[in-house]
Amino acid sequence: MERTYIMVKPDGVERGLVGEIIKRFEAKGYQLTALELMHPTKEHLEEHYCDLKSKSFFPGLIQYMLSGPVVGMVWTGKEAVKTGRKLLGETNPLASLPGSIRGDFAIDVGRNICHGSDTPENAEKEIALWFPRGIKTAKRDKSIDTLI
Ligand code: RTP
Image (cartoon, protein in one colour):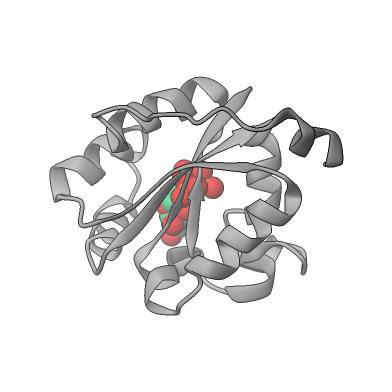
């Protein structure tokens, strides 16, 4: 089963959208595998976004991500990475269709509510970065999967 790292960014937490985001992943059929409210350091965020270091928006991105707590989550299930990003919508909320989280709740790329891993390899790296003590995965009752 594939895992993805989904993070509610500070604007999503401040606007009270954590429950809405969890609801959408649960309704789709994904299993919540880990969840934590965190106050990441600048260094931690620079590591998470290390691929974007050369971008002009990088300092603003880090400042935005430091503006409040984030909620880190791991979701598990079939094609969790690709489908997780579909549930979130496009990076630029204005390009996101209504029905996606960013399409329904955001208009600004610099305040786009949530993060989702872009590949299964990056998902595992991000899960290791954000949940360094590891995750205990409860075995899910097989009868639930047949209902989804
Ligand atoms: P994320 O990692 O947050 O899920 O976003 P993503 O893969 O869809 O997009 P990425 O290119 O990795 O950008 C990471 C975050 O940087 C902010 N951003 N600002 N032009 C801009 O001002 C700009 N472009 C990107 C967004 O918060 C984006 O989610």
